[in-house]
Length: 176
Image (spheres, rainbow, N blue to C red):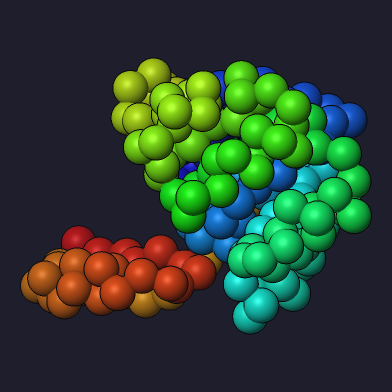
């Protein structure tokens, strides 16, 4: 999640003093993006479900819900310089509208990106120093990756089944 967060932050080109909108902000990648962006002096607006609003605020984001009227709710929170779509929930048109430029929007989840002129970020272009940066952020107390559940290696299949259920905040860890 940290490599993906670092990669999309680099690709969207947002910097200190700017505002980044993150769609799907409460997931694993979104949580990492919020923390890294805040560490870099970037204001973050995050969209998530009702149950995750306090969680986003706890990570330093201006929080709002997705769903009908989300574009207007985001506008009420402020100007958007760049946007990330981490959920693939059909929001690219709204993200382009809010940023005013499809080049300021990156998605990791919506394969319709070319229709909107938006960049799709896949696994290519990885950040080779992501592990070192993650360790530095964690050691400074600026990044926390929650662990939902740990499994012994012999229960790797159960971990995989659980992970497919989705909608958890934390990672699953295999203990070797």
